[in-house]
Image (cartoon, rainbow, N blue to C red; front, side):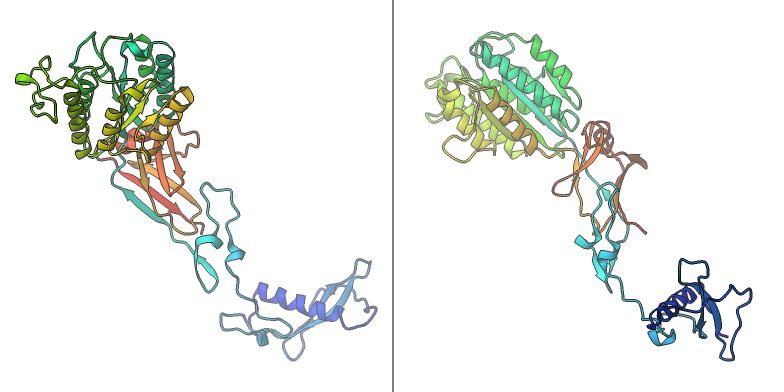
Length: 412
């Protein structure tokens, strides 16, 4: 007798038993259990099969000799047994439960109806956190609700994004009627510094004068100290017209506002000189890859020309006649800051997930980094196939020479 596999035997027995039960007879003759299965001359044997729920539940079923199954076998090799139909991708769809799963039927390539999914590891070269500098007007006209709203909105946005954005704060003027603004920030750039920014805002007092030109010059110097390979952004929030320029040396023509001997106190047209300084400073920032977002606080409509010019020069002009963000109340200011922060790409990497992957594994310098849906410290997969790092994971992934690997793991 040819060799018979257990699976093959079970399938043959099932087919034969079903045939015996469907021959049209109302009953079958019972047989007691046999200790020995008698074989016939053809190599088959007789097998007692339980077909009822009664006390005498056995019938004799003859099982012929069986040829072992192989990839070339057909239904003719096993009497009464049809060849199995090929599985398709829906038979192997991922049942879920693993993080970041994708059903095989959605994206997997197929070969003969079966999904293909091979593990893949991607090494990320650059995961640099963005730096965002708030340049905040604290002139005397900011008193009252405007100052309260501005402080509250900045506190909220820095608290929400401190795990992935390096915030810095520069308030101006530094002293009453001082046109030059020193390039020392009130809070230097860092991840996780929302608390320091909140403390600085609460301790700040209002001053006379609105040297926006000098503040933007200081901002360009501060930004210039940062690595140009990482994203850098300036956010200017002011409520009025600049009162004086910080440097009038370039104001030598009627178009730029002529100042005698570069003396800012001897300008024929100071407003033109101020506007020229603002535009040239913001244009220089844009040329070095730094965007400048402009927020007009209540009362800023009088400075619309200057604010529009800076938004256009800074590469962030809004559609329509008004190119900057107009914020007449706390809700509008919060919305503007959230829009800006959400548009800044920071501490992340774009990936191309392996079709049909089961889950993602992320390591930094060989150490596993956990997924963190709360966005405090870890990583998460965002829309657009963006792997975003937060908190300590952001710091580790963006460190010089960090080895960041993202693996798409398939079920085997």
